[in-house]
Length: 133
Image (cartoon, rainbow, N blue to C red; front, side):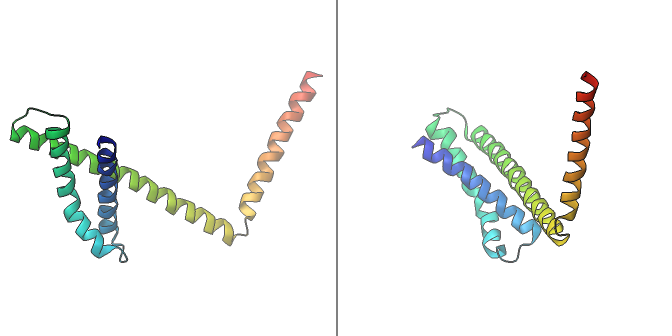
């Protein structure tokens, strides 16, 4: 029970963060569902954290402290998921840009750089071998 609960808690946090990113970036394809998930995701996370602290961990806290702890945990989960999703977005866009740029130049810049690096490395190895003899 605990493994599935905490796995669903993490996945819900990542899904909520992804929907927040989709709303911020105005991704038209996912906008209606993302707006709904942006509204309902934090509420579901907050209730799951309240359930986790109160029932699963059997915490004997007052309702105010329980709510504050759950609110902090929800905020931290959304921020961590937002960082993860934002990093994945940056890597995907950067990889796509690099691939398209290299493809448009027929990979000439890449091969020129590889040949230059190989020639430099080979000259350093040759100088090292000649220096030892």
